[in-house]
Image (cartoon, rainbow, N blue to C red; front, side, top):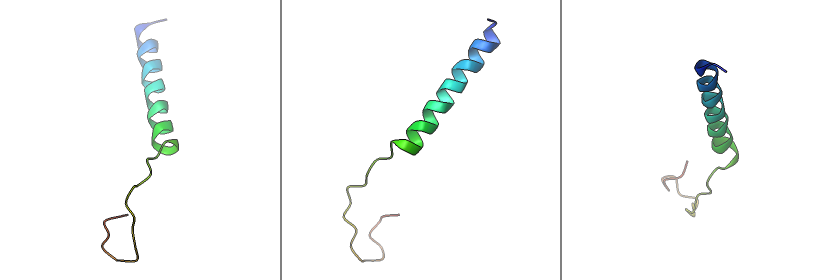
Length: 42
């Protein structure tokens, strides 16, 4: 394999790992939002 193929493969793996982490491992908010308008949650 040429060095360009190795670098492209590493970048692909990092991009997939970022997307999987972003969409499937969302952190739950610990804030308890009531019915107020400016509770700070979005």
